[in-house]
Length: 59
Image (cartoon, rainbow, N blue to C red):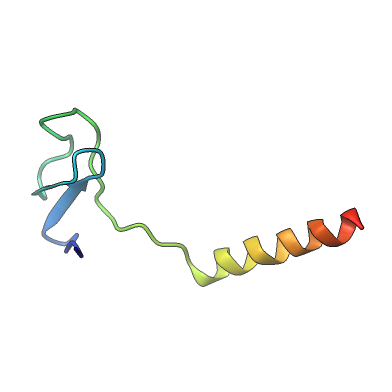
């Protein structure tokens, strides 16, 4: 299920889709997600590159 974050917010704990003006989940009180989870390609490349360096230094 893909959520349109320009219209809705999302509670990850209760898996509820809420109106954009809602900042906390009415059921659990947790702050809701206002943006999707994503990792940039640059961050992912750094993570892979640094783990390879660490592995090379151990040998």
